[in-house]
Image (cartoon, rainbow, N blue to C red; front, side):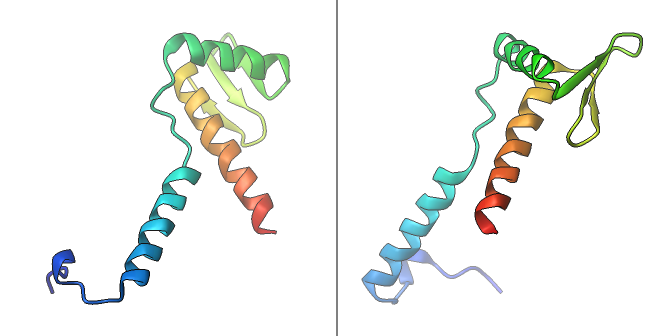
Amino acid sequence: MADPDPNDDTSADYEQFEKELLAQDRDAARVDTADIDDTMARSVVNDLVDADVVTPVPEDRVLVHEPSSSVFDSATQLAVFHQGWTAASDAGEEDE
């Protein structure tokens, strides 16, 4: 079954307006992690190490994200993961 053509949508204008507002709300609630460069990632990881959220394991050349027990070999991957993890944790608290 093909998707309906949005130009043929005959629902009331207020329903279309409400759908658009809900889509905008979802977009605004998402965390954008595409803007993290290496310098910012290192800064985030250093802050997390200072806060005892991340433990570096020099002999294995990895970083351990303590709250989730996830292991990373890249500061950028860890920074992006932590932002997403924090956003998910914050969203979970709002749902309760």
